[in-house]
Length: 314
Image (cartoon, rainbow, N blue to C red; front, side, top):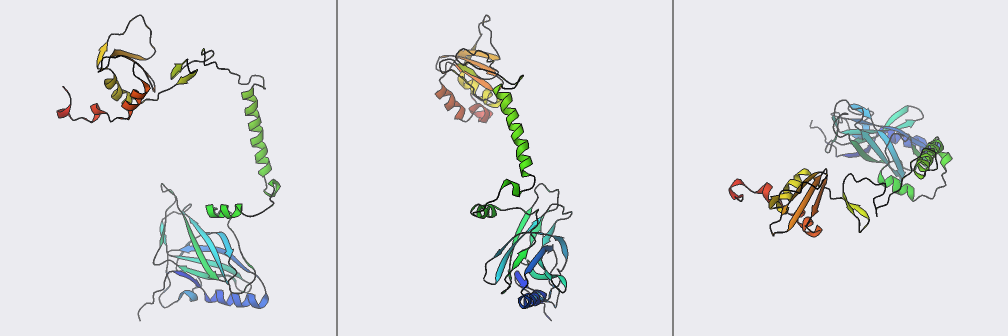
């Protein structure tokens, strides 16, 4: 007898259907308890509605949210995290479980993923994985449908956007421990403010006068006295090595009576202008070349670095 294949999707089990009948007769509510994940399949000779357990359960997932459309169906968002997974596996089935007043926990809905399995990475991979599944299942005319939401589930951007649209009146006291956390952060912010403002003895006090550089020591950068600011041209060693040959074509001996901070080079440019360069850590100071010309050179491709030996100038 050939094996019957079933399309991927959610299937209400017979036990789930029986539970609906019980709850409609009693008027009690329906509660979903958990989701489970497996790498098995529907046994030969069985059907999705006859399933009372997964083909091969691997782990529990997390119920993240539930939405009742009031048309006889609900949507359950289930999440499966790779955290704690020792060996990666292909998730080929999910089970949604509910509480039966007579039998206890029963498999309410079976979700088949045989055609489109989801790979769950093992914990410890470079990137952990959080897989999200949406199960749409029948609840018929049961008036009250709830689910036990796992507190470790992650809120999606859509969840946060929907929550923001709700007109709610929550207060800080509604969340246990939140006020204490805010108080701790408030104390730290107040302390930092006192240190910076100088209100606390021994706090941080400073002043800077960029017109005369009073109380200012330049570590990297160039003092622009006219504009009353310190300018810095960040430059890597590779960029400096590429720029310098384009700025100075013939080196000259610098004046020994002049003291320089960093490596000082002086000479003439290709067009005969006098150019001097001071190389410091992360900074290239250039005199004799306009900023516009320097920017244009920096954006050009480095000819010395890319030219082949055969094409290099003598």
